[in-house]
Image (cartoon, rainbow, N blue to C red; front, side, top):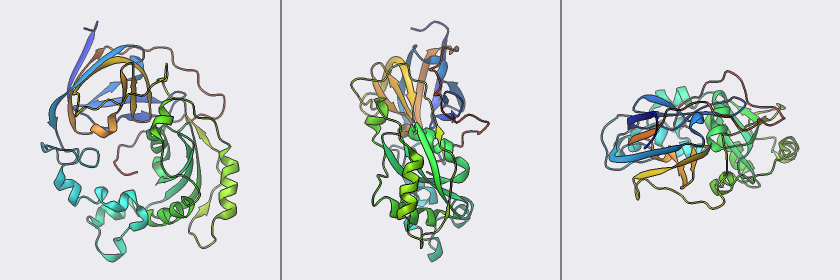
Length: 296
């Protein structure tokens, strides 16, 4: 089907990202990294074999939970607990953390509350050292850290306060249609600071905002969501990558959703192609390495 074919088979993980003038993507397949930017405009094919392996214990599982975990790991790992999605529900202080050592390592480090623009303004939180990875995973075209706190619980308290007036979710459909307008995030930050209660924890930040440019040749005019559980084989021309989505001529697919799914992957040998021009404003370039984690 393809000239100079590359074939791989194995379970996948979420796409790795690297912040350059245009965000660079690689897909882990069976422990190997497939560079994706060079496949823009080319046909790709992948097929789910029907097997799913837990991204934590690697055991074969009939169903995937929490984006790639088996049922046992989903029930026992701290990173799959409800407080990860809702940090204001942290129960470490009650002595009931599923994995106290994991909690100390991942939750008791600096976290940042931020404003981002993926499908319009939203508020979110992330560990301070993985801000850019988080924003690229969301498909944000702009992001601005606004408050730094010392632990995950405090970040949840600030986020909850801000979410009373700001959205805290990304509209993936709007994000993938490429019609998101730029926002003056600094002005929005000042509005937040004007209403932020003094009793809330954290250091107010005055950093510059970040911008991201994604490898997209064409945005879809009509969104068709592809589902490996319903149709295990996907083919089409790769037209773009944004967030954790592949944009194909046949539809869009959230690759992070299928962590642990074993795929047969087949593409042309990726070679460099012209990239979309970077924005004129500050870009998120630098030597920051992508951090693979299920923790938001």
